[in-house]
Image (cartoon, one colour):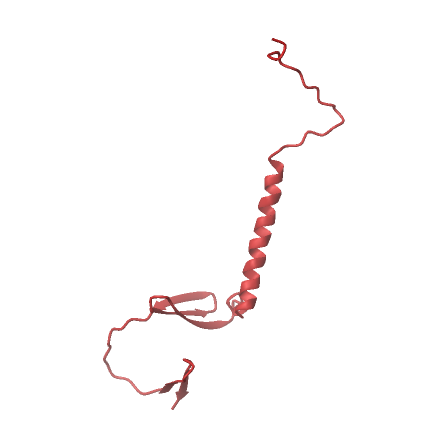
Length: 112
C-alpha cells in the first residue's frame, strides 16, 4: 500500500520553473527564419530579385509538364498570369517583326 500513497514534491523556491512547451516557440521562430532564408536563396539562384522591386517590369514564360504555356507579366506592383491556347484568331493588324527558333529551343524576335 505504500506505493499507492502520493508523494509530495517540494519545489525549491530558488530554482525557476520551466515550461516544457516554451521550447516549441523557439523552434517555430527558427523555422520561420529558415523558410525566409530559403526563399531569398531561391530568388537569388533564379535571378528573380526583380520580382521584389516595385518599379521593375518582368515577363516570365512557364511551360508545364503537360505542355501548356503560361505567360506571367509584372508591371510595377501588378502581376498578371495568362494561359496560351491553341485557338486561332483573325482580325486586322500590322506585322511587327519576325520570330526565329534556334536549334537549342530559344526564340529570337527581330523587329521590322
